[in-house]
Length: 315
Ligand code: G3I
Image (cartoon, rainbow, N blue to C red; front, side, top):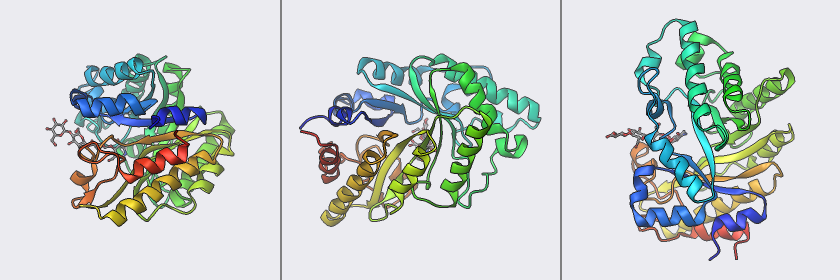
């Protein structure tokens, strides 16, 4: 069947995948990644603990491998992520002086965004900054720097890479709720004050049978602000081993998500958070759940793959 990337291209969109560079040695993994996707993002390799494990000492091995894979396969390179409370090296959390922490943050943003300037098309500048009730997450950045750390990070990213689109990214923001509304208000405020922001990422780590009914309306309200939106980390998990009925329902859910993006002009695409069920993060974090992606553990396509291909109009 026609690759997903070719079908998506006809709609002006990309289909992305989170890449783990060490898995590229597996021919099954590599061939699916090469064939199907027009955007790649490092699942872990561009995060702070990977790129700056010690202050001022940068390690680019995995990140460069992902960037090279994108270049070799004519895929966009999406950057994930510059400022996040998780996968943060302990030296960052240990900084108590606010000015010093702000300097460490902006130097990190400048170095990482600067290295991939011209290659990365969009960055998740700040990841998961909000709680479910719409208040700010009490991260080390929030606690020591206050609300202004987000705009400081965005300004530093713009300075380091004027051509990359700059996004804020979060989970459980897929439907209209207190958390997505808090991000909506942040975007409105940034646009009103001229703080650089271009896009919002909706992670969409979903559960079979529980796609929020307001997903399309939510994407649209952001898009109506004049920014881009993207489904950035899509997977739809279920109890393992999955029943045939669950796999059919999962396929319908994938179709719903892809159609929501296609219905919104400024939704620039969908990224899957992994290739195969064999390598997904989910079973490690949610024991007894998984089977969340388009390829099964043996790299056979699942009903969800067919549903996505159908939704994109793949020939
Ligand atoms: O690299 C070490 C390895 O040296 C060590 O032996 C091994 C033992 O646990 O751990 C390895 O690190 C793991 C890393 O993935 C690389 O595989 C970490 O323990 C593990 O916590 C880490 O998990 C990642 C997780 O982010 C961290 O929060 C997942 O792979 C990754 O899929 C996940 O992705 C996040 C997005 O960035 C943000 N949104 C949510 C999403 C899912 O949690």
